[in-house]
Image (cartoon, rainbow, N blue to C red; front, side):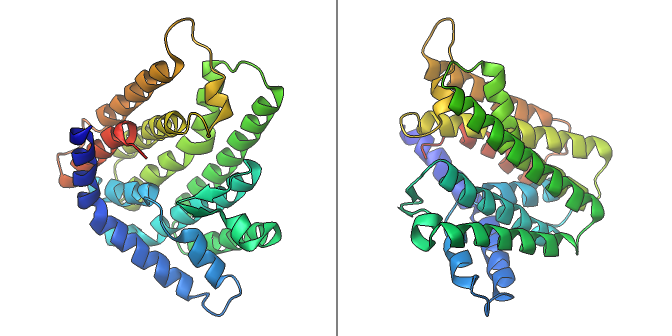
Length: 281
């Protein structure tokens, strides 16, 4: 347990510089809307969080030979899309607490939550209008996939019966892994990387996204995903079987980077893959 905690602390120390860059970029973006009625709600919605998706975007840019400073705008857009999805998910899942405080819709009300999520989409569109066309296309595809994943999950929950493993993977592939994959793909494309490098980092994002969500469901076993608890295995403890699957995807994420040149960014991405399945929160 102590070694896992130490590993997590070491990683968080390494990525803290990237998290700081992202937080500063978010603050700068929000300042553009300081006169808006949405400014304070936006600050509330964006406070806290691991910033793991935008960090992966910056590290992917760096691992592909680019500069993380040139990818900050797009990293903010990725975090904004994640934030928008959280606002909606907490309403759909009837959550009450996130990051040790009331969820957004309990703090500001349902109507304000829906309007704020729409406002966030407007900010994302504005950011994407200043980026490469392909980046906007990738992010819009992620948004569509996330919605598809959410509605498939809603229908599966309503059916209230056993969920096949492949359907569970499909749900988290669309709902969670799509944005992880988009973050790493955009990062590579912003570095104008070779097609093989883009593909490698895209695979990394996909696999780490699956591993990350499975670990989330394991950590929230009693209060989280009803879908994960309904997966039936022929034998063995379901949580242990899912943990094994998560480790498999995390290893695939690391393997996808094997042909990339060695660098600090590549090493940190590998450590994030390990963190995804070893974290305790």
